[in-house]
Image 1 (tube, rainbow, N blue to C red):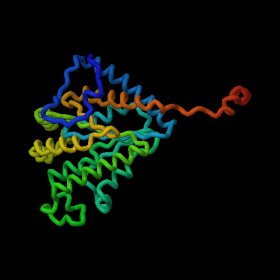
Image 2 (cartoon, rainbow, N blue to C red):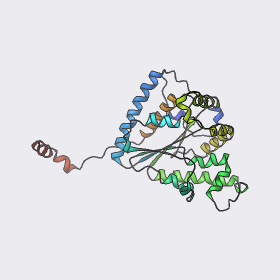
Image 3 (tube, rainbow, N blue to C red):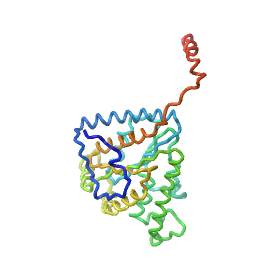
Image 4 (tube, rainbow, N blue to C red):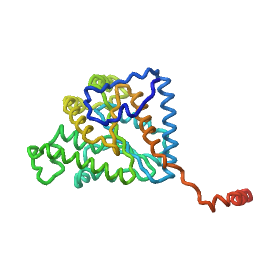
Amino acid sequence: MKSIDPNDFKVTDKIKLSKIPTLLDIEADEEEKEEKMDKVRDKLSDLQDVMYSHNKYSVLICLQGMDTSGKDSLIREVFKEFNPRGVVVHSFKTPNSTELEHDYLWRHYIALPEKGKFAIFNRTHYENVLVTRVHPEYLLAENLPGINSVDDITPKFWKKRIEQINNFESHIAENGTIVMKFFLHLSKEEQRERLLRRLEEGKHNWKFSPGDLKEREHWDEYQQYYEEAINRTSTEHAPWFVVPADDKEMARYIVAKIIWEEMKKYTDIKEPELDDKIKANFEMYKKELSGNK
């Protein structure tokens, strides 16, 4: 099996999504993929335990992708060995009435991970420069000053939102949140096949929504706005990784491996050492416990 190098997926220069493959041939069978996945998943689980005791950093994993790109199953498979107290998943759907009474980033701020923990955003703050660009009428629900109709939404408005998102990520990174953003890069044909499976396989019927087909009609627009958002917001402190997603198992492993390799850079994440006075009295504590049966 070919080795996975995070730098092969990290966005450091302007990209063109149409030029990036949605399927990666790494010459591995299913058994080998599963074995590799098990190993890196265990490493991440151990790392999270250490990070929890270290209590200085938090980790924010952002997942974006077209419908059926595999975000839910990726979360389940990559993080299933984590201690439940150390990871929380947030799925951001249409803002509710309470969320709409605040600025668009508010609900993301309050969902940020505590120190020592991981948070996974399944769909993220980027929906505010993706879905709302495809459907600008949605913005009217935010009741923004100066935005009274779709005609009031200018290119300058979107440029400002991108700047606000960059500032948001810069702020949380400077305060100890490690940010990694993943775009699950799915082909239109693979999406078609996955939607068909939802209709043909009874156990997956519940996942199907006619709205998926309506959004599929906007495929090219979404690709354009994803490309623009990724190019404008991939930074050293909050990088984007474009992950081929036509093979779900491979996509999961790539994401897990990237997280592991990126986290290894934080060599200061270690379990705290006990106070010297406590360590000096270990034998006394042992005798005390041995006598209290």
